[in-house]
Length: 286
Image (cartoon, rainbow, N blue to C red; front, side):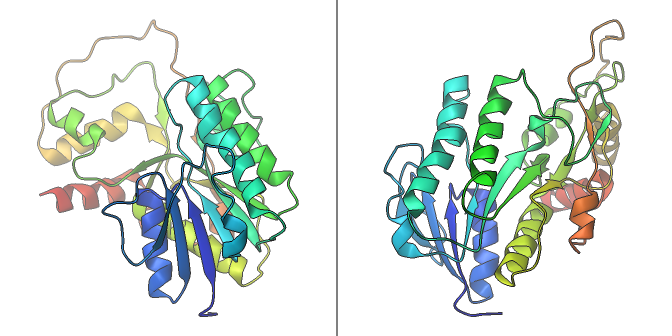
C-alpha cells in the first residue's frame, strides 16, 4: 500500500471515523470534515465546515485527496433538510474540488432510494423512487456525483446497527416488538461490516481496481421485522407484550435487497445475518 495515500471524508460521523481510524493505521493521511470537531479522533486531520453551505468546502481542492468519501446527513428531518444535507452538499463538494481530480468519489447513500415498497427483491439496477421526496434528494446527490467529471461509486446502505444501547434493543427490552402481520421485510448491515466494506472499496480504488458505480451494503439475510425482533427478545430473555392484530392494515413500505455486487467485490461479511450480528451486539452489551 502506498503510504502517501490520502482520503477526505465529508460529514465524518461514527461511520466515517471508523473508516478513517482503520486507514490511518494503514498509513493513510485522512482529512475529515464536520460542523462540530470537538472531542473527535485526534488521529484524523479535522476541518470545521458546514458542508451544506455554498463555498464551505473551497479548501478541498488544496488538500488534493486521492479519494473522497461522503457520509452526508440531512440538516433537518423535513424535505428541505434532506435537500440541503444531500443535494446541496454534493454540489458544494464538486465545486470545492475545483480542478482537482481524485481517483474516485464515494457516496454513502441509502436503500431508501428504491421504488419497491411491497417486499419484493431489488438489486443495484432496480427502479428508483419517484414519489418519496426525501429519497429524491438523496437520488439527486447520487446523480450529481455519477454525472460529474469524477469517477464515482454509490454505496447504498441498509439500516446500520451495532450499538448495544441502540433504539431497537431498547424498545425490545421493554417488550415492544413489531407485529407478525402484515409482514414487513427489513434489511441491515452491522456497523463493522459497513465500515469494513467502505475500507475495502477505498483500498481497491487507490489500487486503480475496477469498481461498480453502485453497491448495496446489506447483509445476506433480509428478514421480517417480527422474526428479527422475536429472535432478539428470546436471546435477551424478554417476553414480548401482546401485539395488535393488524392484518387488515395496508402493508408498510418494504423491500428485500440483494448484495451480489458486495460479494463480487471480494468483501467477506463479518456478520452475514442478523443472528450473527445481534449476538455480538447483545454479548457486548452485557
